[in-house]
Amino acid sequence: MHILFQINALLRFLIEMITLITLAFVGFTKYKLPLNLLMGILVPIVIYVIWSICMAPLSPNRVDLRLRVTIEIIIFGLCSYMIITKVSVRVGTVYGVVVGLNAIMAHIGDGIYGSSL
Image 1: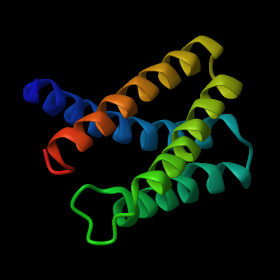
Image 2: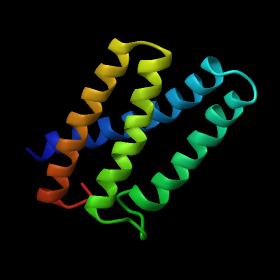
Image 3: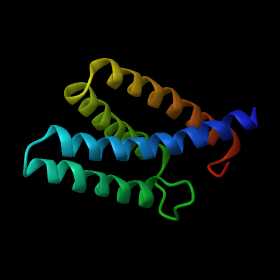
Image 4: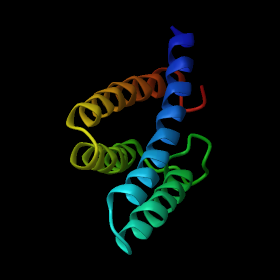
């Protein structure tokens, strides 16, 4: 079972990177100037900083579970919303379901094995 949670942790990292890339791509290509600069550069940078300070498993400032889940819902929900409204409803829905299942599995793994798989 431990290997399943490790694979999920790798998938989670890939989802985090895909989220940043998707936000930058959608921001640059689906918005007009100057909003595209804000959405394509600033939003991914702010999310990266928030994630690295508050959410990263080895961060000394990692917030408690309730706040982490809230931040995840905001970040992944924003990305899903942007995909649904600017790219495709189907792709955005699949992204949201995959992220949701991954988050549930990650939090179960954190509860069983701790945050440093």
